[in-house]
Image (cartoon, rainbow, N blue to C red):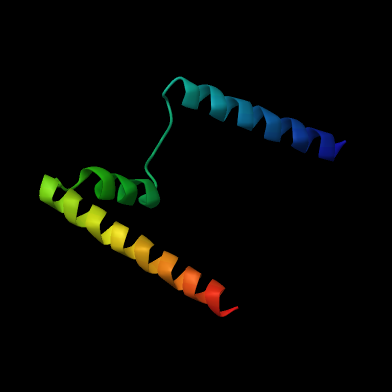
Amino acid sequence: MCVVKEIGRFLKRGADTFRSASQGRYCDESAAIDELKKEMFGKEEKRSDDKANLLRDRQSVGSDVRKALSKLAVE
């Protein structure tokens, strides 16, 4: 009987959490959320920064593709 009550409590807490979150009444006070907010919204990026990041990403992808193809050619 105790197991059934625990399952019922778990489902009730899940439903309550989902209901309050869907209505916008949720707490986001965790350190991980604050860190993500700072990372996403904390600094202003310029267009030149975006271009540099895109170029660096493109070079990284090219390097990965070259490594994969060289491994494939060796095998």
